[in-house]
Length: 217
Figure 1 (tube, rainbow, N blue to C red):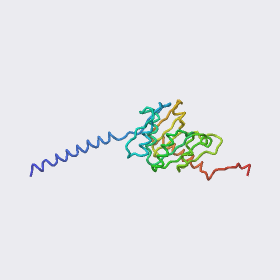
Figure 2: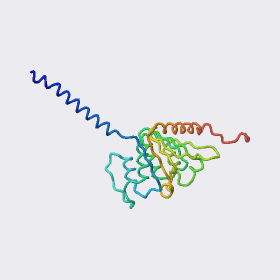
Figure 3: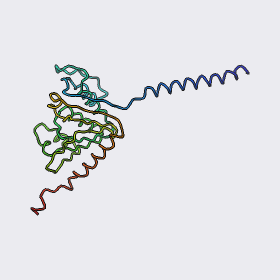
Figure 4: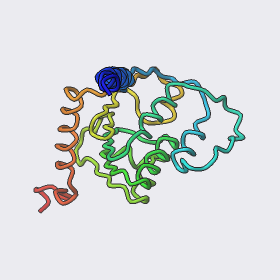
């Protein structure tokens, strides 16, 4: 009896030590905040696997027959960060004509992610723009009503990840231009962009549009 009782504190200490070790491992494995810089042009690569997985995550992957190489690149990393959205996605983009990025945004919308888009009125009407497809899918889109450009180029994923830089979301910029993207999870920088988006979103409320100048009234 005494021997069994003496062993109990030792067992408790061993269990506490094991628990402490497990907690240390868990803390060590905690995902670090995203901080990444991407440079363009991005080498051509097949992104079908990423998009197919996002569309049907439970299905077995089907090899894409296209001749483009598979592998990591600046564009695939941008796409992967975008597809990580689970709750919300705010887009504030001057030009948006990349079919792959447009498809990714529509996939997120179908997955239940709340998507809101602010764009430039002149550029959204250009041939190849994805804005019409986004609207047709039921995504909320607002645009400027000013003589200047709505020239922002940023996205906010789940209100915690900022994607911003010089890159227009066009195939031309992605494949041919010298561009940059900064991706970060840092509330100090994300919050001002969130506030700017909300300010613009409210300012571009269609109920506030003026289709005729005061002089013509």
